[in-house]
Length: 72
Image (tube, rainbow, N blue to C red; front, side, top):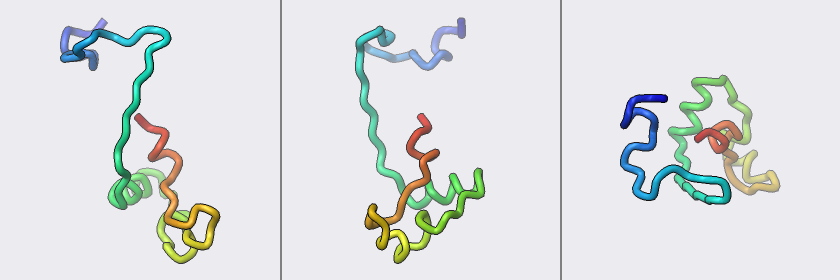
């Protein structure tokens, strides 16, 4: 086990989660996030950068790469 304070649970008020617990986290994605992901992966698919093309899709706006939204 990691040293106290280095395992990511330091400062947690109600202790570690247990089966049945739920949590939620949100964050607004910025163009800087898309650019950083592109630099790491090379994913330059047009719907991530071409606003006119992206607006013509079912989503109606620029689309964030899936890897950006599935990371923690």
